[in-house]
Length: 117
Image 1 (cartoon, rainbow, N blue to C red):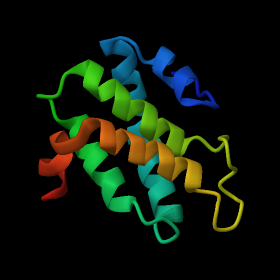
Image 2: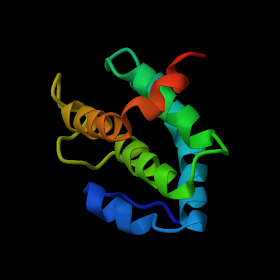
Image 3: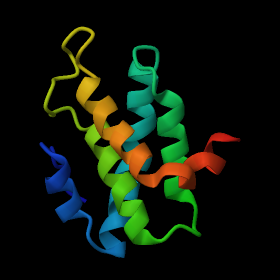
Image 4: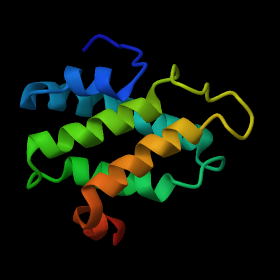
């Protein structure tokens, strides 16, 4: 899959509108999520939420269209170009937090079991 820099959530959701495209997004996440979490994990307060979303994404029982929401959110977190650059002190991850929080709210109690491991 060609690496892209996504600038908004709508652009990401249009990109991952089929099971095959969701799987390709999963591959990018598998390659890059942990690298970013290791690099910035101590700077962010939502690392446990990222872990729960990743576990949800990898669950074969979850429908692809539900996974597409998580793919979009995690790719937004991974992508270095976003609304507030990650290099900005203190506020650089606020937009990432907003996207992750919106995803958590949307999926709601569906994610509860993925926090328990």
